[in-house]
Length: 483
Ligand SMILES: Cc1cc2nc3c(=O)[nH]c(=O)nc-3n(C[C@H](O)[C@H](O)[C@H](O)COP(=O)(O)OP(=O)(O)OC[C@H]3O[C@@H](n4cnc5c(N)ncnc54)[C@H](O)[C@@H]3O)c2cc1C
Ligand code: SF4
Image (tube, rainbow, N blue to C red):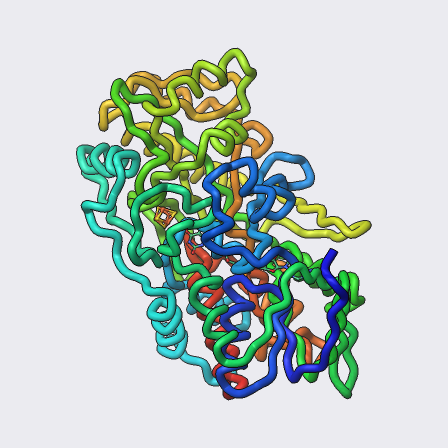
């Protein structure tokens, strides 16, 4: 346990991820005295030892074990300096204008303090510049993603390399357990250094339990920390921001509601040659699903992206009995994998009880129908690319060896408890807008000095990848505050 720390600052920011680090840096650079409280440890390249067992414990919430209440969907989040940006895949996908328009028309965002769509795009551009965003080159697309690309091309399906925030990447493939080469510019390497250079203080191993607020300011307290400040910015992420607010008796009945998990379903394939999916940039190519975006519906359709996890993560996501799992893992170096990324509608809720989150989520039938189409397209791409077998990791799922087997996907049970799914993009438990917990000025309703700024703000899913959308919101908030 770290020594007790206490102090008085103008602003206190809770959480050092995509929302917290950006708002903290902007406030400090504007001359405010700011402390950034992070529950997880201070980490950097020297800590990232490329060993799955040690790194999930060090860097992930619940050592990577956070999941929905029914255990069906793994809900991944970072718990370390940089939050989820330290362990994410580095893909850069800003919000589309039609998504903003969807919120303006259907979620009361029309009057947003004069913020225009152009302002949002400028804020996204600023975030992209700050994290060194660029397009992955064709040469950097690894074998795993290349097979998906080649299969899609043969089927006449378009796709493109993704944008990312890597500079000087050596293609080691360890992005999910911390980049030991300082190539992936999470907030621990981009905004946190700027924050500290501007005089901000970072206190790690500082879990916040409660926020008390009054006309004179706020008191933020937790494990061995107590901070008095004029304002607090709660940026603990979609699952844990509601916990802080509920423990503090803040926010009312809307806190925790309207959860989107945007779960992703895997397609596995085995090739007659080595793929070594764990080498190179793990997620570099996106196949157009088709992804749909409209003012009426927001984000829909689906996209498919190559993906790689180490053997431990891969094994944990394949719900097969040992007699089936073992031979499959024996073919790890010949295996390819992709995730079907299917934007959902909010259909969940986070409830905090006895200091723990219960994440309730049931995918809608409409979501499941799109997921099924995505799995079929993923299977077709791999077969076209020469896979000897494709597997959708469902208990009792059949091996798919040819086009005629693909129809079997229509019969697969696809409840989230059947298929092993992950959520890396939870959003929406403190929805911003007239019917949500947070006002259009980012203030928690009923307060004048408690701001929320993380992925919990979005009314529906903001993007297929949520890091830059969250950073964009933080820049917009900074602008509203004159920072
Ligand atoms: C495995 C993975 C891969 C991903 N890949 C991509 C990708 O390629 N592209 C993309 O755009 N997005 C990706 N994402 C999503 C993206 O990283 C997140 O959407 C984004 O980081 C969310 O920002 P946030 O500020 O809401 O929360 P986070 O970045 O998760 O930060 C929240 C921080 O708050 C801290 N915290 C929580 N509770 C407390 C407390 N009580 N006291 C103090 N601190 C607390 C946490 O420890 C954490 O550091 C990925 C996420 C994961 C997990
Ligand atoms: S693939 Fe690139 S960004 Fe990822 S861990 Fe290796 S060097 Fe870092």
